[in-house]
Image (cartoon, rainbow, N blue to C red; front, side):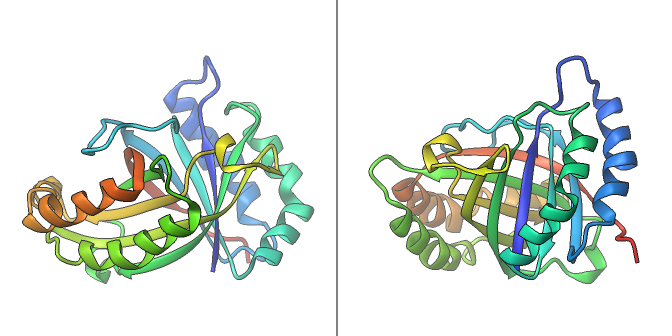
Length: 232
């Protein structure tokens, strides 16, 4: 499954309340009717404090829309038909040009059903360490790091999102123009569980050490994810 993540930064003068109202109103209504869309979530940033042993990167957002499609072709067709309407709905409230990540998602650990909609969600945008190429990042993160994360406790859900395309103003751009190679999604039952996770030996002596070998910076956010009910 292909996931399209549009990064959103409020226009100057647009309040958090006005941003949320527009996203949950006109934007959600337009997105819900997109052809071929399988699932969609609107994510609002609730905490932007940097919680990583690595430095903070260039991503600066107030939220993002994540859309799920069966294939890259389905995504392209959806935006050919409805992309202008989505951009028109976003234009009054977010900075342009719009930056978008197209990713392949790997669901390593599924959030238990009883915590669905209740768990705390944290996302991290990762770039490559200087001297590390895309293939090395892919191999180290997709395989080795995935195993090392399983040595950590406290989290109740974990996804890896590998970037396969980057768009600015709907045009493909080079990595240097949108330096994100992967996005992490972690879910925790509460903040005590979060603190437990990052105090484990599995993180301090395994996962964090390995991450520093191939990741340059990590930009972290806690977000509130709101599901969009799709039009029938």
